[in-house]
Length: 163
Image (cartoon, rainbow, N blue to C red; front, side, top):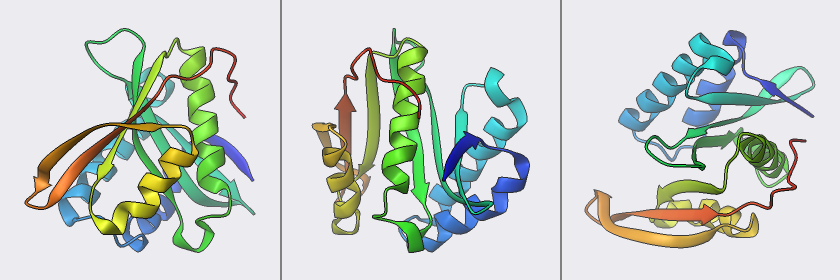
């Protein structure tokens, strides 16, 4: 598996992976595609930094991150998606480590990732905990009644490097 900067031909496979996870509302899918399209249009010079995991010539995962505006050294991981048939096989871990290494190189001192508190997102929250993030905050009923926003953070070691 290789991780490389996303290119326009990745869009369809990333879209399919987002939809096939069966977790996101239509409005959330629209936001993911807006972020992806912005990253693809602006590349390395844009706010959103987009990387694709490729296996056998096929895109199988996506991570998108960027600096948190108005902060010093804080970065958000906006999206991390792995095709459902490859989840729990190390793709997400490699994408996350790659993003973390790049964030550190860019001067990142804190990484923030947000997710839903719904039961369906329990594997996602467990993944973040395994990646050494900790739950920093929970905003009750943020996304919808009964759907909390769960904020995880990590303060990466300065020696982390992209894979």
